[in-house]
Image 1 (cartoon, rainbow, N blue to C red):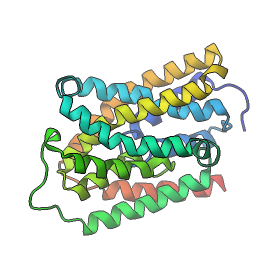
Image 2 (image 1 turned 135 degrees about the horizontal axis):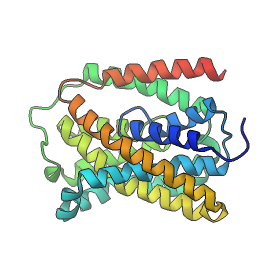
Image 3 (image 1 turned 90 degrees about the horizontal axis):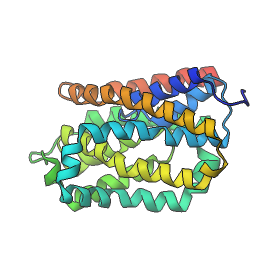
Image 4 (image 1 turned 120 degrees about the vertical axis):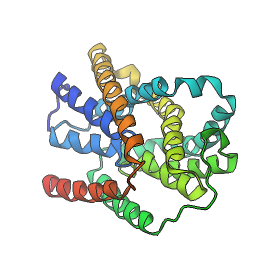
Amino acid sequence: MQNGPMNILQVLIFGVVEGVTEFLPISSTGHLILVAKLLQVSQSEFIKSFAIAIQLGAILAVVVVYRGKLISSIQLWKKLLVAFMPVVLVGALLYKTIKRCLLGNNEVVLWALFLGGVFLIVFEMIYRAKKEVTEEITAISYRQALVIGLFQAVAVIPGVSRAASTIVGGLIAGLKRKTIVEFSFLLAVPTMLAACAWDLLKCGQVFEGKQFILLGIGGLVSFAVALIAIKFLLHFIKRHSFIPFGVYRIIIALVFWWLVK
């Protein structure tokens, strides 16, 4: 395993992977951990923090795309706050356990990817949309927001996927597919900002100047790629279910299982 600092090529690869996977139901954190394994980058404190902080670039992409709704709707922010609270409580209580035992644990990631893929496929096969669904983000109720937030809290387990858990929670709560995808995008803003701020507050003081530069480069790359990924997913869901993502998760878990064993 590489024990030295990351190089620019590795940072660019991480940025692309983060930008592609952050908003798709395939787990960005899980992919970053597995890519680190392939690139033989050791799971140091910086790498673990890098996998969290690089998400700021992808979050900025959401802010740019949805800046109008984020600026104009106080009610939307209130509902995002309700959905945000469960993961705050879980994250605060289990931060040390997550950082020490879950992040960087290949077996946890692979099992979460595999079982999550199976769940997505089964869920889509049995899911039937309600006759009356919530079609506008502004019409989401506080109860629905809380349900989505509870599902998001499960995604503290790397490999589960924050996008997958919130989308499933939203569908169960009675949201239209496009509506929950967009709400999931927006919910990522407070969630990942808080995660990044908390981690940098805990660990940022031990990083060197060059490491912050690497974070910035990775963030810019993930921002550019995430803009494309957001548009892709919104277009994809118009004609497709999430079964292809479930199949992908199973395949990638099996492939990585073979590679890392």
